Length: 89
Image 1 (cartoon, rainbow, N blue to C red):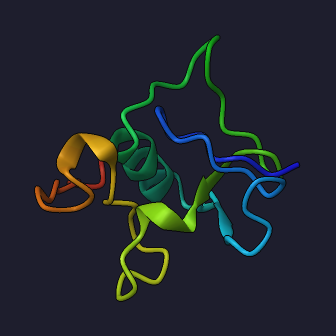
Image 2 (image 1 turned 30 degrees about the horizontal axis):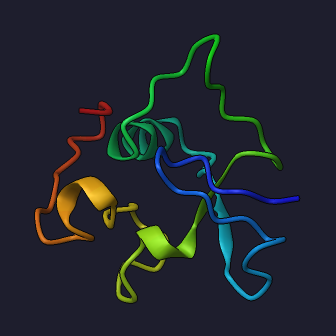
């Protein structure tokens, strides 16, 4: 079952069957930006795995088209925009 890996998000395909779930980009710099944006660190507790690590559509604006997740509970669902410099910071 697809589920969102964003902290404090409990969306899953089982709970929200019509919600889209996006895989992390293959490009390493964009992948690092996504990890930074969702406030996670890759390590023992979290690893991005192709085909099993997803971010739900609730974290993207309509015009982003999968560019970078930016809507989270900690930034008032997008009111405070963060910038990633492609180094994951």
